[in-house]
Image (cartoon, rainbow, N blue to C red; front, side, top):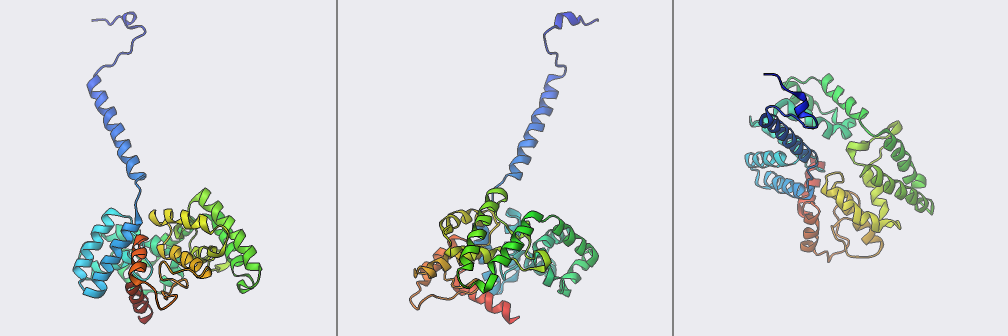
Length: 313
């Protein structure tokens, strides 16, 4: 039989229509699933609260196996972080290894590397860390290569900018009118960064800038408490707690410094960057703990325990 092409002029001829349509539908579905996974939004306030609950079980109840199980469930739902003085993902891996529980082996160990990378200046002195990696077939050179790759992935433009910002921040020991002028410049840099790159997190700029300068974003954010731009940061930074870029303690520190400057009641129990100190003897601990939970911070008592344990050992 000869097909008369002229009879099909202006028409589209689809042989095996069902089979091809099925493939197209599968492809479209796959793209939608992939896109959904890539754009999935996490609320890290929930994550931090779950981590705090799990750490309490480990720290107070001493129930290691329950803590391991809870951590495993958390990390199935959220990409892990390393909270101040909790270091939940590293803790989970170390405890799982100690109690012969599956934590994901090499894959999880490689996932941990960028989380400890910002503090690598000190972390590389931890011999037990390298022993753990060697146990799973990852030598120290491989770890160092991953750290170097992580450094190469930082935003160089932002690293340069925040290195300068930190020098400004500390100029003249923050005395006199110089600090007011410099804080205004740093506020504009922080706003510009947020608008163009998002929050300048550890995974974007690291912790150590040019010429080894220590440049925690938390310090600059803390000093925004006295700036005219404070209302902007108070409203905006909450978004970056939710997406996991800004640790809740950094935000709380800024808010309570502003409260202190304006002789207002403390909202989160912060007075300085890393210490929980009541601003007065009438601090409403119940209210403060409710406020802390709303942004993912541990209770005042829990935080003080974390601080004490960390500096004790």
